[in-house]
Every structure is written in structure tokens, then in C-alpha cells.
Length: 151
Image 1 (cartoon, rainbow, N blue to C red):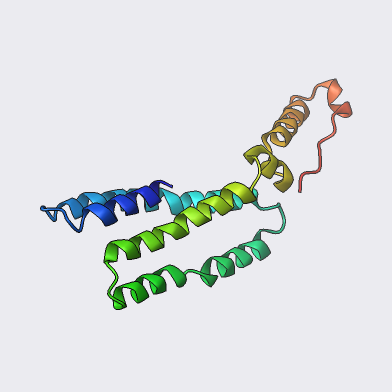
Image 2: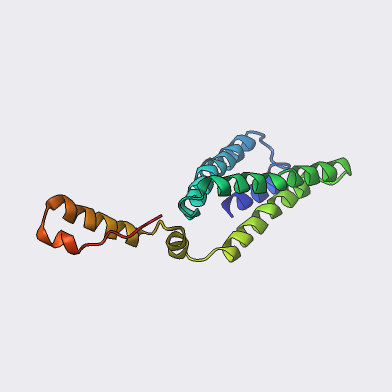
């Protein structure tokens, strides 16, 4: 959403700006938004994957992300080629960001549920850590501790 706001503000203000150095400030904000977006996207995806099926789903992610990556630049190019103001072309590209954010908000559940379904929840990690501490300490009650199978 912040990248959408940055693009919209830039599209409507940079074309009429008396000082073209404002584009450097706008470029900084676009870079800042994209700079955290891509690592966070990979982190979210890697945490949401079920353990043991990372490779096959990662391949599906790569293919899925490339399916429509050509559409926003093509739409922008067609709009500019037909004489439409570039700020409306930028708006058309920014709409794809809002659509993606909407799909992400509607299509995913709570973060705790995602981690639980993927087998990466903190509750499971705490149980394993407690059991490992008991095993390492050599206390007698360790025979009763079961380490859950997390895969």
C-alpha cells in the first residue's frame, strides 16, 4: 500500500513540479519501498511453506510470479502509445499493487494459523527446546518427555 501511495503521489506531482530534483526524492521513496518489499516477500513465502516441500512450491512461486509480470509494463506502454498522459499510465500500474494487496489480505488467514499449518509455529519450537534442555540436563524426568515429530 505504501508503494501504491508513493507511485500515485509521484505520478500526480512530478509532472508539474517546478524543480526536477523532486524526482530524486521520489526515487528514494520508491527504492525504499522496493528495498524492503522483495526480502520480506521471500521471508513470508519461506515461512508459509510446509516443511519438506520447499523446492516444489518454490518452483510454483517462480512460475506464478512471472505469469503476469509483463502485464503492467505492457498496459503502461499501450496507454502512452495511444497519447494518454503518463500519470494515468502510472496509476494503471499502481492499481495492480492494490489488487495484489487485496488478494493477499483476503486469501491469507492469521499469521499464527499460517505458521501452524506450515509446521513452523513458535509453540512447537518451545516444546522441542524444553524437551532438548531436559535431555541435555540428564534429569530423571526426561524419560517421560516426548519430542514431537515436526516435519
